[in-house]
Image (cartoon, rainbow, N blue to C red; front, top):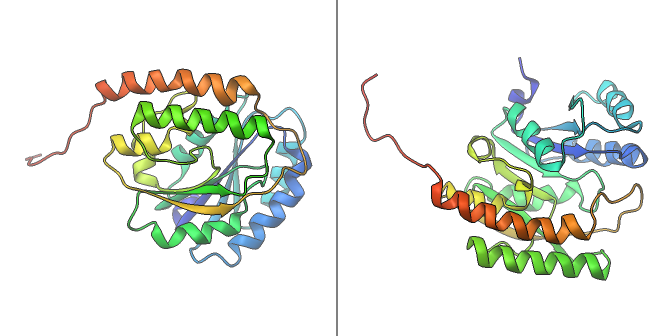
Length: 242
């Protein structure tokens, strides 16, 4: 039996070459789930790390009874890692946080009060602790995405979200889709809530993003979303006799 079915919230943590963060990451997640307002577990998704991340993940899962993992044979990217986590999650709600701990799992408590009413509850990074180039490229990409998709997300790149698992499993997935959660929720006629959450500087490990995958790729992906939106299949069964 899939162990995540025993919980109310599964926190999916994609990671790639984050061995320098693993001890602190495990400690922060363990501390949070011990006091979470929902019965929660952690699902690490190792995206084919080439360092010692998988070894650390296995050690954490041996030590912590509410920690689980899956591991990809090869690196497939953040969107694939998130999809992998969604595919195997069976709890009613699914949380998402990055392994770099620039957001804190404690702030899931800010989102949880709204999850029954909204299919997606997500953070807005308040007092963002990133450099000027990173902040400006994100601002440009967010503005362009909103104009192309019609969603109202202020900070779609914030790595702190909770989504209804059944809705997440229906979303179309593609490389770069992690930037389009709000727009994809709109395709499913879902509702979204945004709330300020804390943001911290990265203190260990190396960022996996550069100007191209922070700005140019997201802009190009917007055109792909527009194409898909016009062809998206959505229906509701009124009656049946099966």
